Each structure stands twice: as C-alpha cells, then as structure tokens.
Length: 327
Image 1 (cartoon, one colour):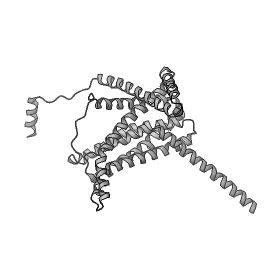
Image 2: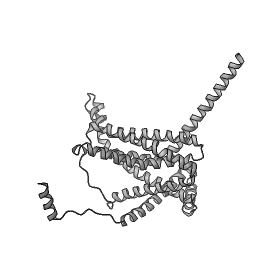
Image 3: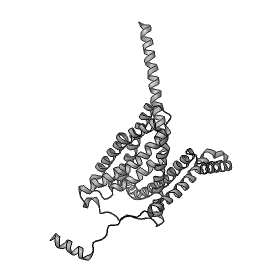
Image 4: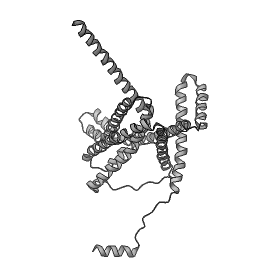
C-alpha cells in the first residue's frame, strides 16, 4: 500500500513537472512572440491617448476601459480564432497577410514622416468631446476600437508567425497569453500616461517641497513623453513594417534585397567584432526602416493619385433656400 502510494505520488510529481515545463514553454514562447511585435505595441500605445483628448477628466479612465474591452474582444473573439484556422488549414497565407500588414505600417509611418517635414495632410482639430456630447464620445470609442483592430491583427499575426511550428493547442494558448498580456500592458500604460498630469498636479499640492517638485516635474515632462512616444512609434512602424516586407520578399523567392542587407550586416560586424550581434541587429534595423520608408512613400503616392469624392459646398442660393426652409 505504501509502495503504491509512493508510486502514485511520483506520478503526480512527474505530471506536475511536465505541466510546469509546459507553462514555462508557453510563457517563454509568448514572450518571444510579444517581443517580435514590440514595434506595433509601441505604436498602439502612442496612438491611443489621442482618442481621449478633450474628454472631461472624469470620463478618461471609463473611456480607456471601453477601448480596452473592445481590444480584448478584437483579439480573443475575432482575430485569434481566424488566425488559428488560417494557420491550421492554409498556413501559406500567413506570409502574404504579414506583408499586407507590413505595407500598412510602412504607409502609416511614411505618412507621419511627411507630416513632420510639412508635406503631409493634417486633419483639422475637432471640437472638444465635452462640447459635443455622449454621441461624439461613443463615436471616438468606436474609432479607437477600429484602429485597435488593425494593430491587434498585426500583433497577433506577427506572434503567430513566431510560433507556427507549435501544435494547435500550444498556438492557441500562446496567442491567448500574448493577446491578454499585450492588451493589459498597452492600456495600462495608456491609462498611466493620460492620468499622469492629474497625478503630478495632486503631488504638487502636497506639503512636502520635494514631493511638490516631483509633481511639477511630471506635469512638465508629460508633453515631452508624448512627443517622444509618438516619434518612437513612427520609427517602430517603419522598422517593423520594413522588416516584415524584407523577410517576406525573401520567403516568397525575391532574394536580392535580403541578401544585400545580410551582406551589409556581415561587413559592419567585421568593423566591430566585439559587438558583432548588436551591430548586425542595428544594421538590419536601419535598412528595414529605410525599406519601410521607401515602400511607404510609394504607397502614399499611389493613394494620393486615387480620386477622392469631395462634398461640394452649397451655393449661395441653396444656402438661402435652406435657411428659409429652416424657418
């Protein structure tokens, strides 16, 4: 009896070790997959705060909560099942989907760069949400969730590409961990950024002079933090988008650009052999960003050639008729 109990305990311990190893494997794979999507994650965190600009401060966190719940729904209800089905039955389509996402990221990054140099189109500033009512608030939330859907799709496909060799159940678990972890990270950071001014102002009212200085420093630093985050987000878009296109072209049989970048990595690493790995990564990142910018500019040019239907302003007579009808 004692021997049977000892054997049972050994079996339970073995199962526990296997389960723990599986959890570690899933966590490690999720970490690697999330790291590959870091550029899109930064962009997501950089984009989202603009959707709460103009809100009454009391509505900021509830709105972020709504957007975060929409992001969970995007990833877990729509994107995750679709990604798993595609990877199971038509795995060859993952690379083209990745490249479409890379092209979109490159387009967005190039568009922002053109705005920096004064050649891009700036949308007119909307009236503050607090002046436009609850309907405008819901409209902004819907717009944020739609934007999140695009970025979330790219994050999940990048993550899926990193774990494509895993079994179906492992892929599902890893992608679920990535979806939950990244959403919590992004919207936690967004909430912190949005409320940092309030935190700083609260600290500035404390009795301690040192705490007051910290509070005033936070208030002054936030515009700088937002600008830096926005700039890093644009660079990340070009880098990630360009790298996806670089690898995708090579996977699809077009090798010259990838071969050139690989050769450049080896040459530059030869100049600084002590930092070989780091230098290779920096070289690849540089050329990926350049490729992303070039392709993004091409797409911006193509899009600009597409005719857009403009709404005609009513003529003076029509305005008078409209005014008369309103009375």
